Image (cartoon, rainbow, N blue to C red; front, side):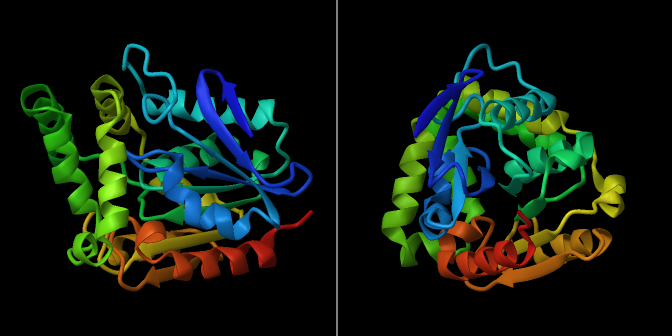
Length: 265
């Protein structure tokens, strides 16, 4: 089913009576990056996947976003669909949104899956890099930026070994509105640091990281997992920052086992 909630494009898969899992994609992608996981889980779970504001089919508006707006959008979706204790699954930017949402209202959720993300806010160097990315979009166009950025998200071998998948993902990112893409960069720059909150998380938590992730390396994510009480950490072989796309079978097995073990009716 397709919904428009708070001008956000929302897609649901499976029976609403099943236990809910909400998927939040990374930047600059859309909900379709989770299709392998949705296909694996939709018979047993009510899968909700949406396009973050500014990307995919969601509203672009003026591009003046902050991460708190993205969390507000998530809460609107949960409220409108009447989701009870959903598990949140977020990758990269989606992980930033998930962590901040849990920090704001942990009691709303049943569990957490964090893929290739981190709790730290941008330092000055990262902010300068993001500012330069906006400049690149303004001066050289969205296609050049996405080709550079998306390629860096994957393991070095992935574009050749999974050429069809990589090409499809790259083309989708290039169809985004540049205003929305730049707005998401600003929102990512605006996010707060959730590191000190990690030790207060009392939800079942699975932390997943591609073994060749250059953006949020395994040692960074393992350290984050160690701060979350009773969390599980898994490194995904043959994958970079986009582990659910690069090694979907491994990620699917981990998610399916984690959900079956921890999802309480």
